[in-house]
Image 1 (cartoon, rainbow, N blue to C red):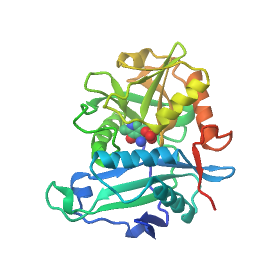
Image 2: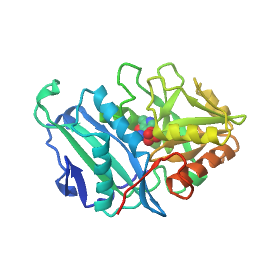
Image 3: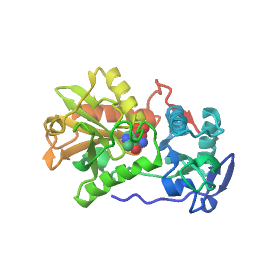
Length: 310
Ligand code: PMP
């Protein structure tokens, strides 16, 4: 399923808004040569009180944590980046949209030592619908276990959301699409379930919600954290544990969580129906509550929404 990019007018660059078309980098910038770019993916929802960004603070903290891991030191605080994101949404007159802050190493160094390359910070935002297809949230998606694995811990620090890591995610995604699936699930080096190409994975078995440990092979998803908190507050028992591949086949329910993906039911894995082959009750209860909070249709008891303001 391809998702087109709808251009907006302005991109925030180092404290200023510049025209979308002017946000270019040199061919020999390290971001292009070596994938030296840290990024975030954040959703803004058009709530009854105006556009509001979901868990902006957590995303920006992860952005700066990712930079730290890669020894990048952008001169912006979480507060300044909050302002950058809300300004970008407001000035582009966006409602429901996706926000993409990026911190990258620019043009300057020739070899691997990045010291002479500047650190550049950008924020883009554009309208974006459902990630895994129009009816994915209701009907669920068909996925496979990928032939590509996730990296070993201490090879790529996957707690960092770094562009280079997404070569692995793209291999998983392209492999899945080539075989007629919406997305793939990568196994970790130990052969147990790690995560999807751009999502965390949850299973339900006998009413218990299960998700893989954060074991250095998957991203600590902010939606994953939201799902765990919502599930516990709904009275669902949640366990983080090793998840063998075959438990995907025998689960009552399986779903993905992610910013773009939101909470998307998985109806089959490797052409084996999950449960009845339809979205299950635990998945739907969590999805309903998640979307109601994000869309501002119920009280924001967790303080997860940042209004964009007018
Ligand atoms: N894993 C990967 C590899 C991802 O790219 C994403 C999307 N950022 C996730 C998990 C889910 O993370 P989040 O819920 O923070 O979007």
